[in-house]
Amino acid sequence: MKGAQPDRVRLIDVATAAEVTKSIVSRVLNADPTVAVRPETRLRILQVARDLGYEPHAGARALARSRTMALALIAPSIDNPPYITIARGAYRRAAERGYLALLAEDFDEQPAGRSFVDGGRVDGLLMGSAVPGHPLVEHLRESPFPHVFVNRAVAGSGRNVTMNVARSSELAVEHLADLGHHRIAHLAGPAEVEAAADRIAAFERAIAARKLPLLPVQFGDFTEATGFAAARALLDAAPTAIFTSSLGQAIGVIRFLTDAGLRVPEDVSVIVFGDFPAAGFTVPTITTIGLPLLELGAAAVDELIDQLAGSPPRDLMIPDEPRLNVRQSTARAS
Image (tube, rainbow, N blue to C red; front, side, top):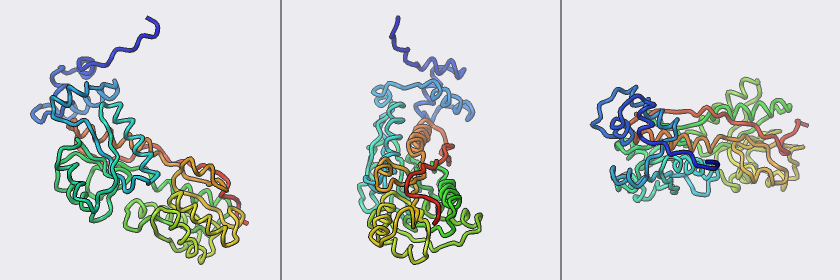
């Protein structure tokens, strides 16, 4: 009949496609530790279920497994723009797979953060805050609780879901160097954050590849106030272009440059790591390196749910690449 909805994918459909019994599929998808199947069979069942779009009945599944059917994403700050986009991607993918995704702010100084892990309030954790010595990160090292690190990499954890941060720095340097800029400054994120260190290392490699002088790197958080305060130190190196680590930093830098009587981009070009709608509405509009944040959130949820279904954790760099969005804040060096 015209307009009829497609039938829901059933457990038997997954079993038939994977060439196993319905019972085996049920036990694998429910992470039954007593099921004896080969690793390749387990992976085949998980892949078939994902390809077919199998969605278990949430109520029955939660009742059978004493699960909450909820996942938590812990972000460094709930007003951090990248994590809002990551959370959107995570929420959508979680809903597609029968879960609810919750967003929580960092609990580095709040013991309540451990209740996610120890209190059974969620089935798994997407950890977006992973500075060295973080209490919850250290607690997770000793816990079998399903979790992944998203947009942050914890060395040796074997469960990092990341993107190609190095390519973003390369794109920024390539764009500015092609415009004739020889003195490119970089305002990085907090020095203790591994993602910032990776971005700096890639920036320095790209500068060296172009045989350009390496100017001193400035560090700070991702706010407008930091951009404004750091711009004075950046200008001491007489750059013709500045690469910032957030839109907030860029807005602060541009404000300082304007107050100092400098024009953007005629005197100093500005380019940003990360792209957000506001970048297209500032004066001038800001050139950005767009990041696959929605895809990153979705991939992190997939990895976490696969853990819940019995797959071993792994490191994953998503294949989606950063992209250059040219706007008014960059121009040829004068």
